Image 1 (tube, rainbow, N blue to C red):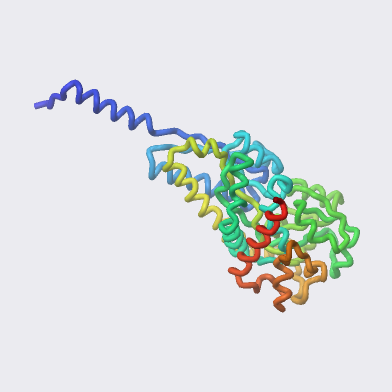
Image 2 (cartoon, rainbow, N blue to C red):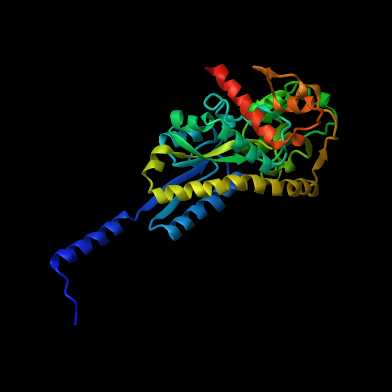
Length: 357
């Protein structure tokens, strides 16, 4: 016998069903970077962050997330990504703080501490420890630029690639060497002519002689095919630098269901760790690959760094990290205890913050 429902009960049940159906959202998020997908962190955005968020949202919530992706400058250029996220042109952006020196003067702090660890996993962990110690580094994104920093991004180790062979630092004098901008300060003492450039411009500029070298990690020499036009790569060991970030528009994040927000933060945390582990795993493979591609890849012998890199740079009584380690009788920051590195990095940044007030 068919069970009869009272009209009031039937209306209530239908209302509950309708409310449940209405609460399920089809969410579209625009994610972009000015860098192309051959860049390691962008590749991880495309092949880890995007599919993992979509998969976990589908499996654990009643919602669905669809990403509209734009890499290699198709939505935003490398120097415009912060503003793109801020304005809502894109929802999520990956970019280098090196292009935001006036907006984010302290977030690229690792570049101010050259000859740090060449281990990308260590670099991103140290950076995270500093961000935890200095909340202002994260808060600036929310307070000034309408976005939330959800992940830090490590590069692999920086060295120098050139179109010419060199064996002494004096041979760099007068040469035009490119970089992202802030890292060109590393070569001031050598008397180079610094040229700010972008990864996408590197191949043609090296080929045509606009400049004859790049301060760059080996993945770029492989993935952007710089090895075809610049056959020398010298492992100077400037350090693996964590100076990129992944951010999400604050207004867009607030409008997302709480369970979707939690998944985005969860995946972003794993993405952050992967930028370290993948770069670290790839570094020796890429150096070996350069050699098979006919590149003269050499490593500078161990010894005391050039005087420029151990100069007593003192800001409010705090020595930069490379100086600190040399003072301790150590040849490289790689040998500094990691907890001390995080402590002194945070102390350094706090001193600068105090100077700005």
